[in-house]
Length: 139
Image 1 (cartoon, rainbow, N blue to C red):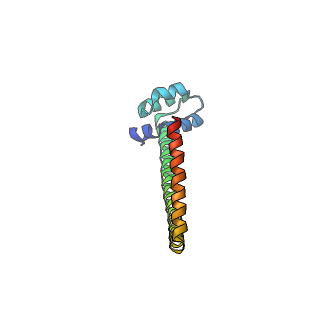
Image 2: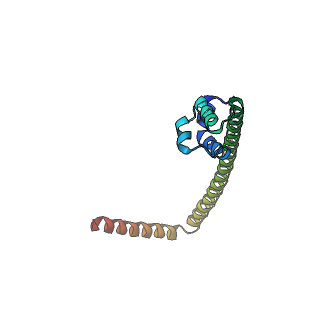
Image 3: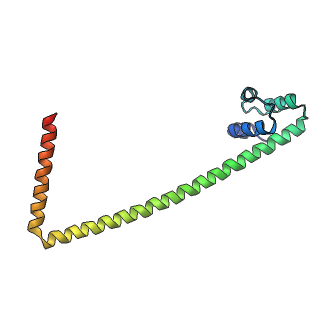
């Protein structure tokens, strides 16, 4: 037998399955039941004329299906998250490697041509200072 918690937890999905099974149920009626197992069974009995045992059996089966679908979705989401994490770690490793290569290349360039490197750094700093000064001055 489906528990009150299972019915309430899977209510939105279960509601759709109940509407498929018993088309005569309205959204308003299902909303009134709002996951209350006994009220739901009584409503379905009243609308369909089916026996309580048969209605309970079908509601339980549908509830179990909902639980299985949600469990599968949870497992798939967890797997996807793990794959995404692996991809992010892989890309981060590649970026670290490229940054390290770029740093080493820049270091070698500075060692080979120290005067030119200092001149470029000075010029870059001067240009950045002028730009920042102009931005603050215009405000």
